[in-house]
Amino acid sequence: MPEPLARQLRNGIAFLEKGLGEPLLLIHGVGLNAEAWGPQIAALSDTHRVIALDMPGHGGSAPAGAALDDYVAQALSLLDQLGIAKANVVGHSMGGLVAIGLALAHPDRVLRLGVLNSVHERSPEARSAVEARAAEIAGSGSCGDIEQPIRRWLGDGDTPLHAQLRSWLSAVDPAAYARAYRIFATGDRLFSGRLGALAMPALFATGADDPNSTPEMAEAMAAAAPRGKAAVLAGQRHMMNLVDAAGTTRLIRDLLSQPLAPFEAKSLRNAFGSFMTGVTVVTTMEPHGAPRGFTANSFTSVSLDPPLLLICIAKTASSCAVFEKAPGFAVNILAEDQKDVSGVFASKRPDKFSEVAWTTSGNGQPIIGGSLSWFDCARREVIDAGDHIVLLGAIRGFGTREANPLGYARGGYVTLGLEQAAVNAASKSHTVVGAILECNGRLVAERDAATGLLRLPEVGRSGASGTASLLGSDLRRKGLEAELAFLFAVFENPDTHVQSIYYRGEAAATAAGMELLSFDALPYENFAEDAVRVMLRRYADERQQGRFKIYSGNHERGEVRALG
Image 1 (tube, one colour):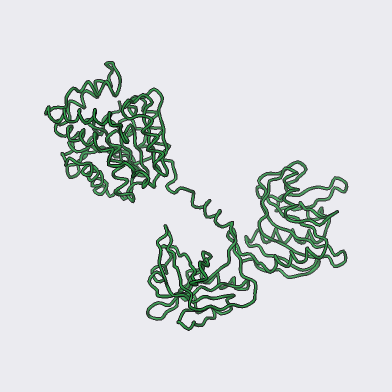
Image 2 (cartoon, rainbow, N blue to C red; image 1 turned 180 degrees about the horizontal axis):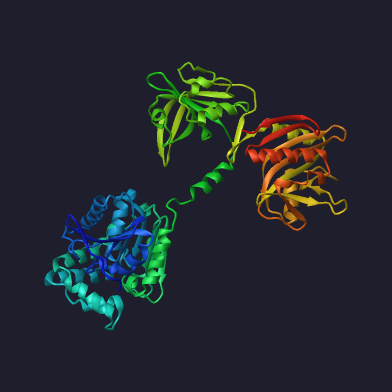
């Protein structure tokens, strides 16, 4: 056993503490004390601030009431006194019930939940047996036959661990033991049907040979909790955190490594970003008459009868409180020539409206000049939605004009007019579709076996016209896993009437027959076509600047337009 730590005492609550980092609160079972977590304190304090408390009437803690809520209140009080706003909480046996109670009553205080060798919806026979033992202990005025639970926890034998448990059980206050055992006997029914409210990552573990805290119980609890996971240690009984300390600690470490959010936020944001949207500026007036606005692509039409729409605003946005209380707002859908307007309202500039033309609607809401469409809304409902609020608006008036909307996808603007021009041109002439692909920061190119010259991956040079889907199929056939991102260039050779469309993208790995070329020393002269050489020089320059544009025109001259 590790060397015992010196106990600390805060307002009648005794505890052991070691380590720095994210807090981890450990809660022991009936008749034991904080020292029962010795191996876990020693191992986990290298990465976490580990606090193991003595339950009421156990170890050095003062007694408390006779309800599970009193034990939950003790744990919460200790966190408050230590200045801990949120903690990982792991409980063993009855400590597991306390941990569940804390997580259900105060979910904002529990980062992750661990429940070891605890109980769940006992059978009527099992409940009767444990309640009879609780009544026997309460009536005897002592802890009863302490050899019986030791044999149940460890099996027969007389090992140093048997002796240690015997010492701990002999030292506990009999009245406190009786109160705790009564709670343990009846506490599991308090959570019947309620584990679905546990939104945090949760571990429910036990030993394969634990006769009372069975694997079936652990699996049932894990199935009921939205982010629950069950684990069963082979060959272990009730005191697996001491008998198989390494295995139990490994389970707790795995729990502590679980992300707090169900999904990694950046990956989820990227997935959401694959849905192409329009861009809006949402506006309102403050009570004293100052206009406020922000850029948003979270806009949705809801209903025609009655006419409704909705927008979302992050709770962290500086204008969130203003929009939440405002009686009305306007949604301005931007045209593709209003990327600068989008940038103004996405910024933290103090006086955004001084940089754009705007008027007011008949109801006094700010309308951005040049908007593709606008909607004047009365606030109908404010809905709390996670880290955002949803504003449901009743449309009181609107206006629209003919133009292309400003598109947005994967973190960048999409110029739909150029995309449409490419589609239209492709339908009227022979089309070559190619890609400027990067793999590990280098350009992917192919070398023509006959001429020895380089070319970009493309389709449609000979035979039928190419398309983006045909290019993707050709790349996969060659073993190149690539993703086409944004349009980069559209140009036509008026002599041959060949239309060329090139995209930029990323390749996960190269394939046979492909070469990877450094952008610092591209052999431009080895590419057969002048137009491709010019295009690659522009790509290399814009890559270095970190800001790409789109070219449209012919193979000699045209217009380069900013993408965002």
